Image (cartoon, rainbow, N blue to C red; front, side, top):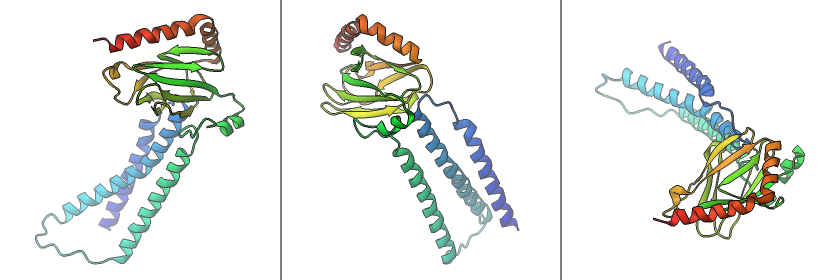
Length: 261
């Protein structure tokens, strides 16, 4: 009976811990990519926390029960127990593998090429916003080819529309990283890496270079501004007039400043 009570208390504590996870982990996602990543993280914690509590409870119980045992005996073979934990481990690993595959197969998490997300967007009946992201030591340049607009170090995106970023570099290795939106991709010279996402809330986010790239690495920062559709369109109209040229001039000035001692 005592062992059963300990097992029940352990399961109860694990259940409480699992319930307590959700308020702590739940937060409003700023993009579909971030939401998918957090959903997977929560699912894995629902498995990890009860297992951790159970293992630690068994450990403490065993240490306490046998603390005065000065003549421990070898563990007897128990095939039923071995089969049970082998099957349980296989089920847990299967769950983790399936859950992870479902998220990693999402175009909003793992884009596979220039046509990434075409089927997804077709279902949503929304037009993709394409942006060419170019890393140039030590700045970021953003080109909107359909609107013939270019900006430097400030990426402006519309809320609630799918966005496809074509990320590359002109010199050496960099990495495009916006942690608060769950976005990250390497920028290789002569190679395109794609990110497909959909911003879900307006706001401002910090852009970093996540790969050490030289003396100006710490200054290779940018801003991602998510605006409403009307504000985004107004910004495009302003940039179409004279903003693109000013942005390129600003990028050249920033590059000179980053390289100067």
